[in-house]
Image 1 (cartoon, one colour):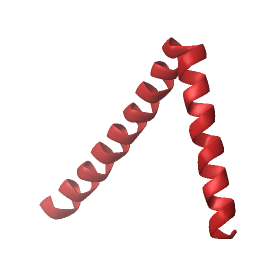
Image 2 (cartoon, one colour):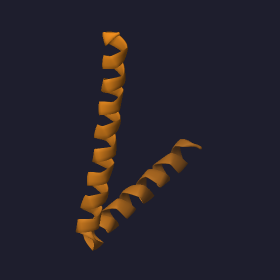
Image 3 (cartoon, helix red, strand yellow):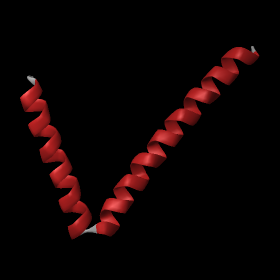
Image 4 (cartoon, one colour):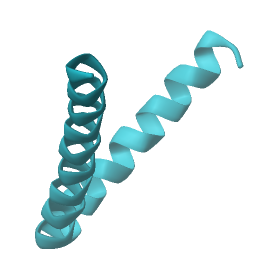
Length: 56
């Protein structure tokens, strides 16, 4: 994928995000909250793994 195609895809994704926020801000906030929760859970799982690995 060339640099121009990547730029177009990025613009389309950002435009969709702006559209989603303006048309349904509650659902957009829920989606962001769920994604953030997944990232935090994943990070905590990685920390737990390394803590158990180093404590043995």
